[in-house]
Amino acid sequence: MRIGELSERTDTSRRLLRYYEEQQLIVSTRSPNGYREYDERFVDRVMQIRGLLDAGLPTRIIKQILPCLDKPRTIHFPDATPEMLATLTRERDRMTERINCLIRNRDSVAEYLEAVSGGLVVDGRPGGGVAAPGGELKPA
Image (cartoon, rainbow, N blue to C red; front, side, top):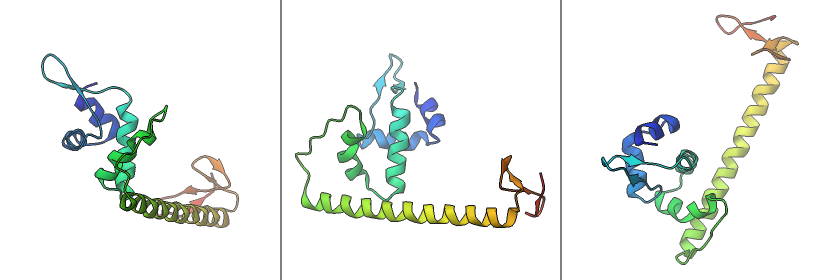
């Protein structure tokens, strides 16, 4: 696929995809007319990269852990320094904290919906409610 399709499918700008390529996070081949061509697998790869960047990992670390994202996994880190391992440990722990916070928030919202819905339907599901204009819940 060309860069435009990869951009659309991943909701990532073309400029950012070129940056990922510059950082050797993804690779393209060139068609005879010079257009970048990407393999289908880069749709998932770009989404993984974006998730890792959102989690706070720098591209230099992402580049090192990319082999762990592939299947089958090929893991070989000749340059895994104690600093890199400490950074990854900190980032993993931060991700775990964020996940736990999201789970708590999701559960709180679910409890609230259950408490205020009184058996109504939210989004077509029993146990919720249908939000009327202004956020008021009404029977489905």
